[in-house]
Structure formats: structure tokens, C-alpha cells
Image 1 (spheres, one colour):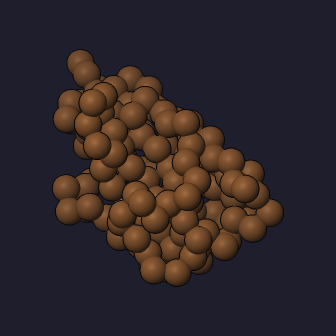
Image 2: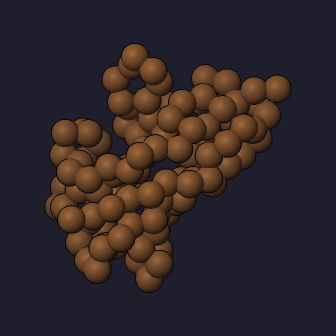
Image 3: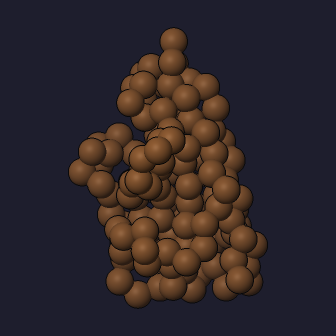
Length: 124
């Protein structure tokens, strides 16, 4: 069982940055690949970024590749998502998720554990 808690969301002006944090409560954090997704009300959850259990591999959705950066600290059981140069289209609820290590998936169906989400609002 893995419990995930996201934080770091909030209101930011266009062009601004945020760093989202996902804290995992598990003794075996390094057994999991971690992913970030976003979801707007009434829409499907959308993949943003993923990072392998070791941090040595990562992948991004094409739409955020030059804008977001995923990282992790296995000593702190934490994964991060740095959001830069935000625009209002990135206003969403952001979720982190954990999948057993193996293929670094972009498919939400492969992620077993989910956090409750953190809201990001980009507005002037």
C-alpha cells in the first residue's frame, strides 16, 4: 500500500512557476515508477510526466516537454514536478501516481496508487 499526498499547487500568474511535491508513505519508494497527470473537470486524466524508480529515466507528454521537469528524491520518498512559464491552459488538478517499476508507462491504467490531487490555477 502506498499513500501519496500532493502539495504545492495554488494561484500563479501567467508566465509564473510552481513546484509540485508528492510525498509517498511507503518503505519501498524505490520500487515504484512515479507519474504526474492532470485533469480538468469533466475531462479524462492526462499524462504529463513520469520518472523511473531510480530517477535515471523519464518521459514527458509532448505538450509539456520544454516546460515541465520531473525529479525525485528516494531518500525523502518524494517526487517533484517543476512547472515553468505557465499559461491559463494549465489550470487543472494535478495528480501524482505510483506504478510498480518496470516499463515507464504513460498510461494511467498502469498506475495503481494515486494522490488526492493539488489544484493549479493560472490567472492574472
